[in-house]
Image (cartoon, rainbow, N blue to C red; front, side, top):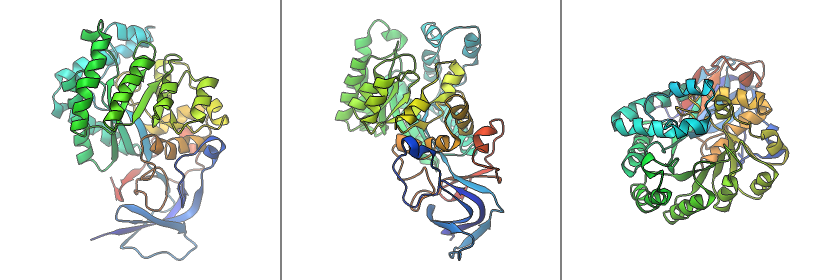
Length: 412
């Protein structure tokens, strides 16, 4: 039985780190170590070692000559909502006509639209649709993904979503993390009873999610028109009693206090961050929380761009994720996310690659498993043809440069 694989004649091996840092911050984000004319040895699905073709090659059960192709660590997409039913292109037209995100939500669109559709869908149908999306993002080079609930907004439907995510974990070789996002929006029946829905999350949803072991994290949409800082704090305190660490949707629509409450409760990440000022930057600098930017959401909704350049220049780490969902970011193609980060957020290509690999792996609590070409990590990789430079990856935004993806040592 094959237990080791030696990839030879790699034109460039990108993100090679013998000892991988947990995350990269500030000026470190522009550093991207690579090896030209390299080999890479994989044993039992994990990276064993790497080196120069000019050196003696190690023995292996199988050898594959890549003929100058480039190898990157597979992307870690730390923020998605890929369990959903159908699509929402009619709201896309509403946006073109000038309706805002908040106006569409007030009309029963947005998250509530997806919640209605999810309620009517069977678990098997949701699984099949999500599986197709999982295969899609794998073909685009993603090897680890966090999937959030939040289109259920009732105990039964939130559990249905999380059980679908559990089935995806069981069937897929990708590294998958699940986040419980019952606090995504107020259901229509609770519009006049906010307290009732908060209590439902705390007293009914959380205990059942924890009892079945369905979530790795708990998330809250702490933003204008959604959940307040105080409501977020109550939910996070309840989640902590079940050992569920927090992640936060924060500051997408306004200066909501979501970043501050996330840091206060040691959130693994705070995500979106279109509205981030000096106070928020200083709060993050004093924390271990990963600021995660979702540039395709700002692009698709025509939102204010998050201040990535200011954050990095201040010494912060930054992660990138796709926010793949039916309403505000209907794509999980991480190469395009890098293009948006470079064009709209003025991130260097090296910074964007680090943000979508090492730092996004940290954002989903998987930094010891994926995110770099490092001994001991999973052999989750993708291959491209020989490129003129790493900058060509975000530059060529209309071309899928990923030729094939490897998950745990096996080409998909």
